[in-house]
Length: 153
Picture 1 (cartoon, rainbow, N blue to C red):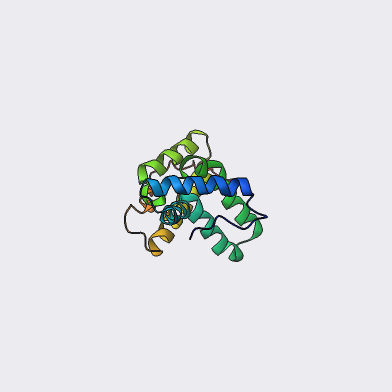
Picture 2 (cartoon, helix red, strand yellow):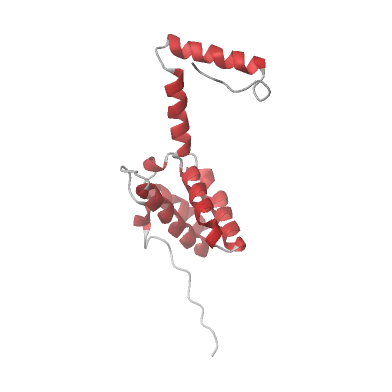
């Protein structure tokens, strides 16, 4: 049996539409329950989902400002480009493209921080059992360094 939700949250019209979609899947020899599980698994393994999970996990040990800046950097620079993609499909050259885009905007320090954060997110995926794909920390050394300022003594 397949459930679409309880009455107040799901209207009768919505339930009928979902039932019609489920019938089309059954007619195409697709199990609607398995299709729903596969879709859920895809959305849980996106770069953004794992990044947000990591953020929630470690946020308690960070200052409020650091937690806000970290998530803000990801939301501004990374999620719009690779956030919706499954993390196992993201390769180092794609992350490098994000970093080079940030460098061209002149935000070198944020690019270095994003590189580090993305490596940590990738490592978290590997610890959770991800097997295929490269660890994104392999981008080390590919970012342009900011110029060292000379300070008066």
